[in-house]
Picture 1: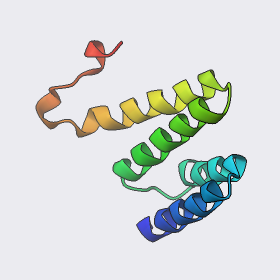
Picture 2 (picture 1 turned 135 degrees about the horizontal axis):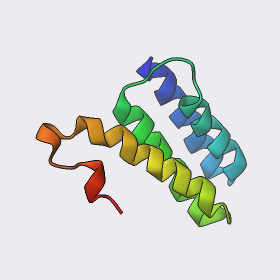
Picture 3 (picture 1 turned 90 degrees about the horizontal axis):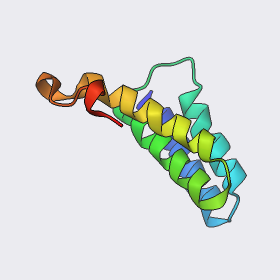
Picture 4 (picture 1 turned 90 degrees about the vertical axis):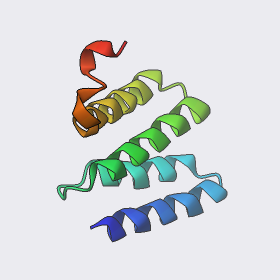
Length: 90
């Protein structure tokens, strides 16, 4: 299923080059809202890119924050030996 994510990332790149930021966000959010499970790193990279775009091109701070919080919650179970736990996060 990572091929689907790569295809949507490529389409997002295409729209970004054309300055169509709304379409970029829609492509990326399609990955996050998919019924199919992707590797956690796919979701993290996608949500980080969405948050970056939202902060750069809009006033959707809460929407960007939500994506960043989901990134962190996806990463916490992946940390080796629990070196990063949720209690150490702001």
